[in-house]
Length: 163
Length: 262
Image (cartoon, rainbow over all chains, first blue to last red):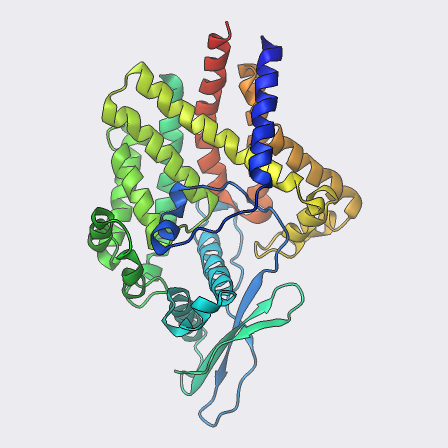
């Protein structure tokens, strides 16, 4: 019987392997995207992909741009993080927001109405929150950009917004 | 019944910890926070009418915080009083939470939380009959197994996983802030390759847990170790609790197979 069971498990795993070999399909449609948690793909850390990093800069009222600053800072780790790691999970949620924007930027249809995109507005709110938190002089303008986390090559730069 | 109770309590603990974490940073859901409802609301109109209405009622700022407190209360009832009738509430609130984050806040752990809460709602809604209990536990056990097997088989297709490059990449260049000491260890290709193989082998061979309860226990012990290492290196604490909550159900599945196969 264990042999029959082993055979069944092997056959099922083989079927699964054939299914996994098929290319991954992104969910289309707002409704499906919002409910994607009920349709798990379980394909974690599958392949190496560029990790976009968000940075921003302030442009003073005279039009002089300041240095680019990384927007998200890694939270400090602590012994209690086994149970509660709110800052760490918030950081990961922010990072997926940035990755969602990066994915949208690759879609020309989304790109044409970027400033109306929800991801764009949320990332913009994230940048503004960080600017406020850093106690920067909130006069003038600001812009943000995405760079490749590995090569630091710029991927995209936002239009300039008023503060 | 004991395995159902263990699944319920561990699942409740996982959902309680998630809710408490969001409550600690609840400012991000406020009207001037990053996930401000006014920006999110238009997208939610695309949802089916009932769900869209539920979102409009529960996801704006003060209501959403109340929803998180409600989740804590429901999870505490399961955890300390064994009250299982609250699972449908926890299931719906889990889906609403994911919608609030436009699909998922924490990737796979959100999906596993939905799996746990939806399956445990079956005995809560249809009575704790042997059939309802078996359906709930089997569904969770199968999803836990699929989560490892699919993740492993998908990695098996990638040469980068087999030569250690992928593991090095995720540890060294990922946004997870892996401790420098661990980074230094995994920068050595001689170590990264066998570790990469180890991860792929553990995940791909997880279906073996269904062979026998003793094999299952050994595999689950490896699973605990695997997730503990993930907490230490990648800081993924939610994965630990969500997956461990599904382990008693996986054990129940392997016991059922043993009984069925005589």
